[in-house]
Length: 209
Ligand SMILES: [Zn+2]
Image (cartoon, rainbow, N blue to C red; front, side, top):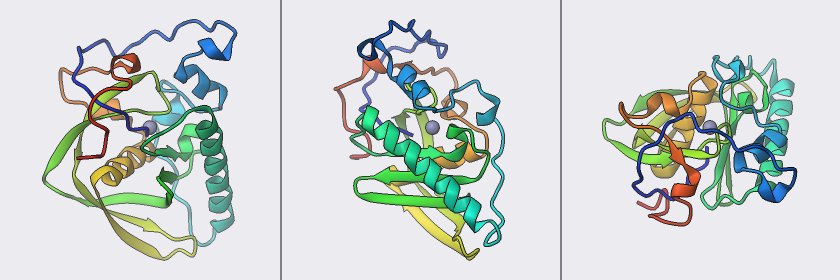
């Protein structure tokens, strides 16, 4: 997930045409750059199925290797695009059908293995989100303000973590990926995504509320 700066904007069709590639990196769209970096794009069956949980600690080596590959992909993406408010990536977004996500905000990194939301607050908020798997648009999504998540350590021990604010939104977005869901599945009825160009550089910074 990639939070951006939201402003109210006219609704558009969710089916945005990605402009043709012009042969120069200066003319590629952000989504085209994500494709070039190996990020699986919306429409792929890989993003529509539930990722397989790791059997831990038995599969600790496989989990470590998957985490390594997700981190490497995030490093590639971070070199190609600046993220003021952090970035999250789920293994299915690089074509790995396993239940792990890595979320980076500031200097913090959060790794969640086999995560599952076990409790969510009744109060919600609605903010714009972006996704590396369809990067040229943003959409308004309702999320619980706080969530409790059960996840596993590499040694198999179950941990329970609580998240709120921007991190709670990040975590919910990435766990959705592991369950085969995209943020567009959670947008309020009657709303559509809007092109990134409609809010770049304006509005209240995401997560600063
Ligand atoms: Zn995403």
